[in-house]
Image 1 (cartoon, each protein chain N blue to C red):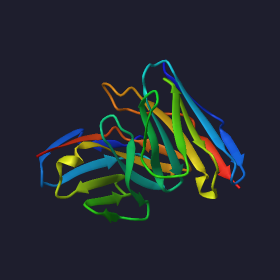
Image 2: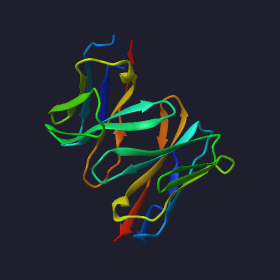
Image 3: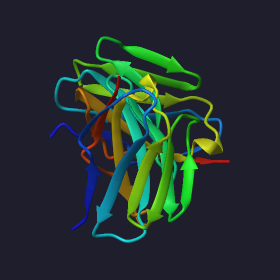
Image 4: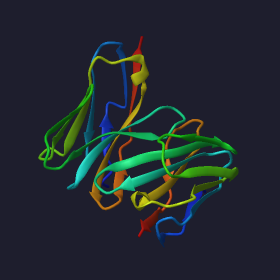
Length: 113
Length: 110
């Protein structure tokens, strides 16, 4: 069966520090991968999606970037965090074939101080 | 379960017509959200309506919420071919607790 992992679960970082959040998927090949930010009471915001290694599409301009160095690995990064980067970050995958159903990871709570 | 259910599962209309999709849920919510998903792409947030609101508008979108019936509707007016997508409702019951429905597949025929 497929599983999706995200780490760390929580992270507290100072303003201006770098960021690296990792997401990995097991049990599937060539998944579509997604990064979302969820603000309580404001819904999910799609940040990036990827249909293959090295293929990244950005949905909104921001202080963040994403990379997909391996088929089942998706990384969310920042060179210098801003206060406004605080939030709950979710990774998701879909098989991109017969169904667009997305499966979400457990999320990372990021607090920028 | 809390998962919402959209109705209909699939909807096909002519360009220019209005499209109405419905969502029902089972427990108390903080807010209800509608998302669009184009095939192969991520979910795009359309509109959020809070539990104390009854109606909300955003461009060609109109959302209603009836908490007594635990239901919501999404109306897309003057539909366009580009509106072709799957539409999902999601209910938020607490911080980061988001439950998605099964979606309505909308096809707008040019």
